[in-house]
Length: 206
Image 1 (tube, rainbow, N blue to C red):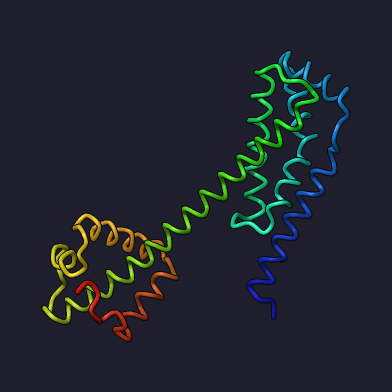
Image 2 (spheres, helix red, strand yellow):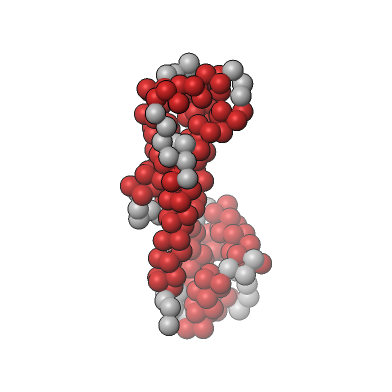
């Protein structure tokens, strides 16, 4: 039996292998070749720009490998790093940078892009965790008030019980509704479990 962890590791290895192969197909250039391509790229030759990007993909490869393991999938890191590579090259060309300084400038651009991608992923996961926690609390409050009043509680009643602003109650309700409509299995499992055993029927918010 193949576990989810093994599948994840297998997918990550495959993505890293693809990245290594792609970078190896365009090895680093010497300063003379880089300078010639830079001159052509400054002159507007799109092919030269594309070659400069391709022959610096090894920077993305090294940066991704240096961050392993990451909270961002390898394929996404490669995409973000490649975008940073292109932006860095555009800035270098606009500034009239030299061949000798190109690799360093591109490395910095790639690292910044990857750091931003990881920071955004951390923020998204933290927001998701807060949303799930709020959803659990909201479901518990709804169950408690429904049992007490024999009807569905109002937004105001939930807000009073939880010491939340009504806007927060409505926002969490809306997010839970969206999750249900898109078949968010994890959240629905939490809600089903709560409704089944009434585990949130405690003293939240008192």
